Image (cartoon, rainbow, N blue to C red; front, side):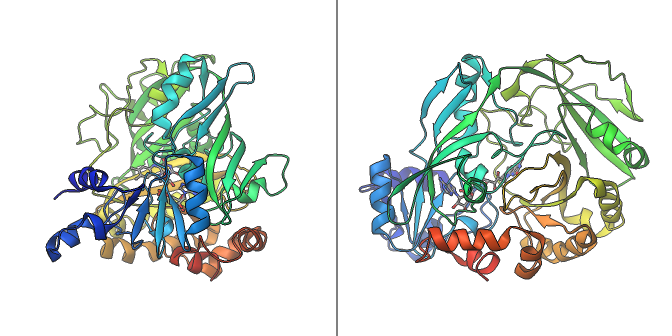
Length: 450
Ligand SMILES: Cc1cc2nc3c(=O)[nH]c(=O)nc-3n(C[C@H](O)[C@H](O)[C@H](O)COP(=O)(O)OP(=O)(O)OC[C@H]3O[C@@H](n4cnc5c(N)ncnc54)[C@H](O)[C@@H]3O)c2cc1C
């Protein structure tokens, strides 16, 4: 039985919002193995025995209060065990409504389990937009905020930065409302699932805008090194893609708002040539599912992500890692990794390089630091990839590298703690909000409590 079929069968067998393997499984051991629930990429099998899918706030509060060990589960797009629990997972899949759009205040209030792709069009139709999106729109708003998920843009903060307020269920089942006036706001929102289950989020939106996307190919690495800031500032949001070979950045995606004065980028962009057709970041793959390029203007939600809303990006046969360094060290960091191309390339599908503006979230890798993020989409060869990561982390250690919380890394807890100046405050906050450790799992035990 495949994963889709399992989910369908399981929902038929669902009782009171609980999907338990003990209910859904047939007796054969082979089927039992197939019934194991995995993350989106399929590289991690959740150990939590039970999965609950509450469809109301009250139902969720009761579960949180009643259950012992538990963890919120969004759209399962993390590549590690951050969303797992030794006992129970509580999916926010059914908490997915738009609760209100305030055109005057330019805000949108959402249930936390909604995915960006599920409300972006409605927001746009109300004349509003979000400042930025991640590369794909299939992730939940709460899952993205709590792991400091980001897009690209020198002046654009991560996806938690437009949050004005949120509602969270504490381990006791009580609800707390937290807004920016609360001194703990910046500790709790990027909370790695350690402090509570977020149920409602209000985002600051802005007037809707259109974006055009122009792609350039074969940017010489030397040109990038000499003009990094100019290149990354040439658009509202810029992404670089490379396989690290040939001293080239294979593609530069420049996303520009059409409500700003636009200069003609020409056909020669710092030595890169304008693409003559839509491209997939991996040039050999079909661009059918990628957002429209070739300078064709379109709504923000159809240009800021790389992949179209209505489309599932791939079967998930990949792994991902991503490393943040201060933007001022971007070129040195990129050149350090380029020297390791022979080790990196065989396991690599593609690297993406993006910029993120500094923010105030205690556990954000961009806390008070304009950053560049160097991302790796790997082949799904876990053993080989895990063997490469320490080398990458060592190359980037001089820049106090921080890994993406939701992707694969091997940086030690001690090193992580030393690189987060607000770590002691976050630890105290986690202990205060979850004194009995209901939300603790092996990921938090290692990386936060360890
Ligand atoms: C194809 C692909 C592309 C990606 N692109 C990007 C990208 O462009 N930029 C980027 O930064 N990352 C990217 N990611 C990583 C991804 O966005 C993050 O890992 C994000 O956390 C996934 O959200 P999710 O809803 O799937 O969360 P899950 O993986 O389900 O959970 C992640 C964490 O959030 C917690 N959580 C979930 N819901 C709640 C809640 N309601 N309250 C409290 N905690 C909660 C979970 O407990 C867990 O700790 C990508 C991942 C994939 C697979």
